[in-house]
Image 1 (tube, rainbow, N blue to C red):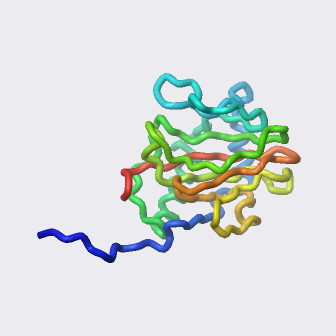
Image 2 (image 1 turned 30 degrees about the vertical axis):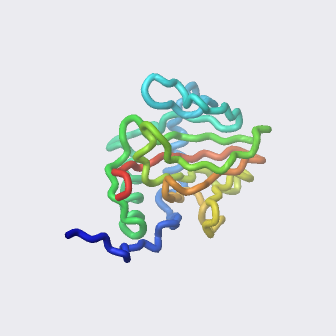
Image 3 (image 1 turned 90 degrees about the vertical axis):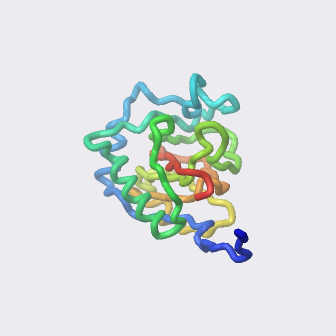
Length: 201
């Protein structure tokens, strides 16, 4: 007769967030320079199927998006994938399937605005977002060129200077409450995206 163990294997890194330098300042500037000036939109990223935006999404005029331009060998996504696999193997040890074509990363441009402060959110939901495992944010801007725009994770200690460093990859579980504060001066560029995998593994 099969019996369920009363002492499951626990991972102390379940609430882990991590950051580490991934790209140089020159590489970050090169990614920003590849942006399509006509492609920026302040509407929230595309939703699943035929939805042009998420049905319950609100427009934030201070934040603009466009699909991340990819270069040779899917650069910089190849570098991001390398970093994600490394930190996952050291921490959560999730079974990851990769980044699907219907949920590719976004290049983000955040400026000063009068938009309401962002509420706490999780990036795990229904439909095509249900298989998200890890969230990642890659800081592209020199922190000296803007104020605000801080990444805040609920009840998780963080190294704020480390999080803001140019070229740094920040990774945390998709189920964790988080938000990004408004930019109060200058312009902040970043890449945001998600890695997917089978649920509860």
